[in-house]
Image 1 (cartoon, protein in one colour):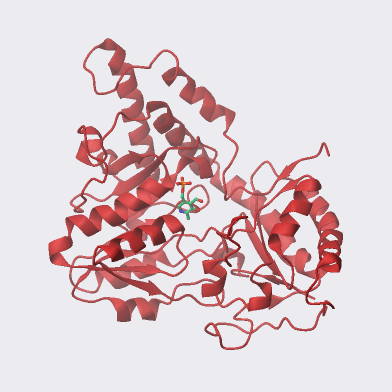
Image 2 (cartoon, rainbow, N blue to C red; image 1 turned 90 degrees about the vertical axis):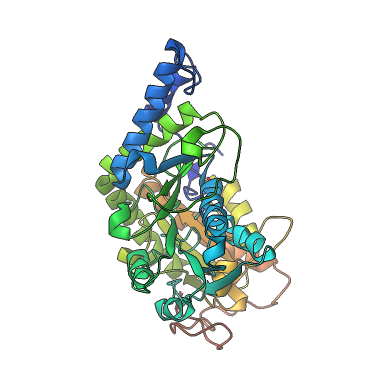
Length: 418
Ligand SMILES: Cc1ncc(COP(=O)(O)O)c(C=O)c1O
C-alpha cells in the first residue's frame, strides 16, 4: 500500500520544515549553554529569549511568565504539583474534570495519596463540564481548579473563561489552570481573555518538535519547582534549557497563530464532512463529542461503532493506508474503556468501538473521501468475523437523547447513525 493518510494529529503532528530551519542553527553553530557568560553562550541566550518573547506575544503575557518544559505532561505536572505544594498551608483541595488527560489525572492521583482532596467534575453527553457542579465544589480549602481547554478524545471545547469567572467570583484567590495542549494552534490562547493563571502547551501538537512544551504562570502565582538543581527558568524548572526545542516551539506557535484562520477553515470543512457522512455510511455509529462545530475542535471528528473492537478497525485502517486512533487510553495491553467516553455516558455497547480522526492542514478532501469509501466495508468485515453478539442489529439500538447521567439507560446525548 503506497498511499498513506495521516489522521492522528491529536497524537502528534509532522514537524513543519520552517520550524526545522529555525531550529537548525541552535543545533549547529549556536550550541552554547545559554547560562554561560561568554560569546558562545550569548547567541543561545538570545535564541531562548526571543523564543520566550514570541510565546508571550501569542499568549499575550509577559515573557517572564513563560516556563519552558519537556512537553505537555511536565507542564501539567508542574502546574498541579507546583501550586498544590506551594499553597499547602492555605488549602488542600483541587477541582478538575473527569475527562482530563492522564497527565492531569495521574498528577491528581499522586497528590491525593499525599492528602490532597480532589473533586472530579462531571460532564454532559457531549463532554461539557458541569459549571453548577464547579460552583458547588468550591470551598474554603480550594487551591486550584484545572479544566482542560479542549478534550483530546471528543474534541469538546470547554467553557474555560466562564469557569474562570466562577472561580474568581468565589472571593478568595484560587488558581485556575487549563491544559491547552490540544487547543494550541486551533483556538485563541489569550490568557487574560481565558482568565487563567496557568496554561500548558506542547509543541508537537502544532507542527513543532516533540519533547518541548511550556507552562504559562501568571505573575505572583505561588509555584514550587518540581525539578530542582540550577536556577534556570527563574528557579521554576532547573536544568539546561532545550534551546533548539524552545526555538522550535516558538516558531511553530507563531506560524500556527498567523495561519490559524486558513488552517482551521480547511480542517473544519473536512471534519464536517466526516461528522455528517460517516454515521450515514456505517450503520450503528454515533458521533462522540459536540455536534456543534463552534464548540468542537476544528480538526476533530470522533465516533463510536456499536459492537466493534476499535483496535480491529485501527488495524484494518492501517492496512488500508490510514493512520488513526481509538482516542482512548486503551493500549493493546489493557483494553480499558476510555474514561472520557465513560464519563460522557456513552452506552456500554459502543465503548470499545471508538474511532478518533484528527485532521491536519496537509489532509485533503480526497483523503476524507478515501476513508469514507474504505471504512464501511472494513467495519462490516470485522462485524462479520466477531464472535459476539452473533447477529449485528443494524439501525436498531442507538438512540439520541442528551445529557442524561451515566447509567440512566439511554445514549447520553450521542447522535445515532443510521
Ligand atoms: C490534552 C493533553 N494533555 C497533555 C498531553 C501530554 O502532552 P505531551 O505528550 O507533550 O507530554 C496530551 C498529549 O496527548 C494531551 O492531549
